[in-house]
Length: 153
Image 1 (cartoon, rainbow, N blue to C red):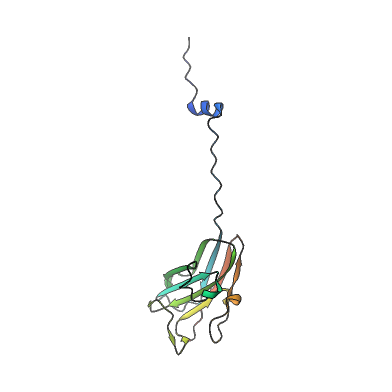
Image 2: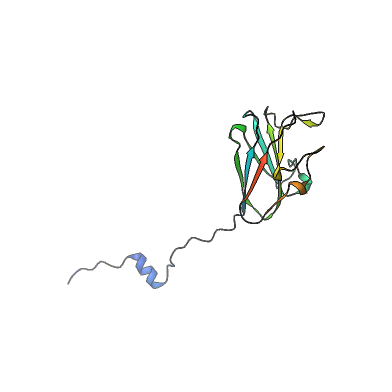
């Protein structure tokens, strides 16, 4: 009588129906991505501070928005940034180039002394643009926003 090795345990379980072939579970919808392409920084000094909000009440300074997304990065590395896992909606971005790194946009008589920018390159005339002029739709796919940082002084 010739010895035959027993069937592999995996084969046995598959044949008996006790083991279902493995497949990765479907990932929950991770949302969309917004890629921010910055240009126009006049120096690599300081930090670039960005906020992304879907709530017009908190635009452009979204520090009190509990759902806002914030990024702070050294200006020397701030050319391509991104926000991941965003739900569908309308958003607006605001950007400041905090050249001296003090955590705020410095002004003189209400006029910005450091760089700033907004999604859609919305114009700032006698104050920040409206949420509506800076807003863009996120509908489940990647969105690219190219923002040029502007300086008054």
